[in-house]
Image (cartoon, rainbow, N blue to C red; front, side, top):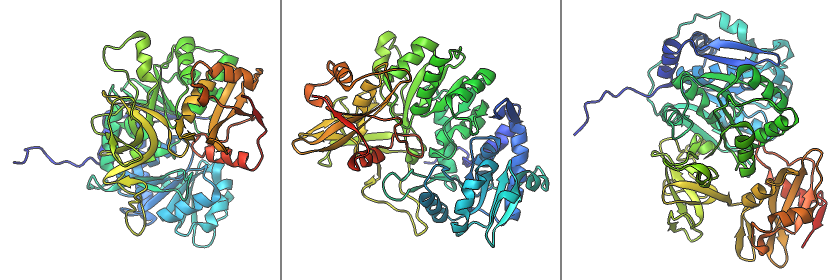
Length: 545
């Protein structure tokens, strides 16, 4: 028996029409350094039609890839909806990838047009001669004369181009499983992997994100999107904003603590999304120059574990609730959000808030042990986290067909590479990445647990922990420390600070003081590079036993 329900497609064109019509007075704004420039969603709808017309005249049709090489700003937000709504495929290029990786992903995706921010033209210029399929470059907020285009590539000014076209476009009715956009992983091991999202997955992911069990975005929210639009499907924030009618604030290139605090003071967002490393810098900025940020009702952090000390500092000193989330490029990216269960209050909530969160109904999860068997969700058994669901990728993109690498996929499940445990009520706690967990004398030591504990010391600004070779124990932890400005601390003091939190055999004996923890292109600790620095003798290591 079939239902009597209509079979309308979950198309992003429908979302664009809704937002530009029924919540058309809501806005997207870009910080300029001394104020904001603002568009209403009604204007976004009109310019989306103009951009779709322009791209059509440039030969872009359904399924063709259109790249962006841009900061978070109004025009990038507009591209996020206009390109998939017309049936093309948005490919947000990660501006922080190495030259080799950036060229690889643009060629692998076969981008035909790239929208480039004017401030990024000098960087993009270095790659352009090696981009085999790019035929058009559209310069946004910049000078077309600064682009040194090779033969066969035409350069356009964004504003002049859009001015040629009407604010009407017949957006097609697409199968909801049609590709809408694609992102590549950061490629910390091997070449970056392409993930292709669908209109359906974007739509369902956005619906989940608006629920109270997730981000809880409402029409009266103003969202500050610090997370880059080129990272992990922008956490779905553009579609969440359009669906909910929330206002959106874009930081452009102003991502340091001082300008972030300045723009927050001016616009007073109620919601922020960012990786913990950036938000930790904001906390330090507030300590140096206090200001009231109590207008923030919640801050969602993901991409890496947020130190509990940082979360509690925001809560106790500034009245701001920091919420853990977990996900990855392959999961669109929200896989879980740490909202405590109903009825839990007081200090008891922290047992839930320091986890990576509870899985939503649409995401199935399991733990698989080293022997390949599923382990129970009992809150203590460890295994690799595997997930599946309507916004989880089932393969990686390849021009020759889907790539289902068994090291990444297991009988229809995505292997996340994260080692963790799941409680009976569905809360995920990550212990480590499988490649980062330290195996010492046959036992596991969590680098994440050590990092969070060390960063709880008031003299520590950042700490990263990696395993280094040891003749007796196979591996031992090395702690790399960035000391807080104006503070001093010795390894003996830090080891003593950890003594009542870890078993004696887990306490690190190797310590290094560094000026900055190396970061990946998406702001995570680059432990691969840290291990290489140690192997190459670039770190001065103190031994304390």
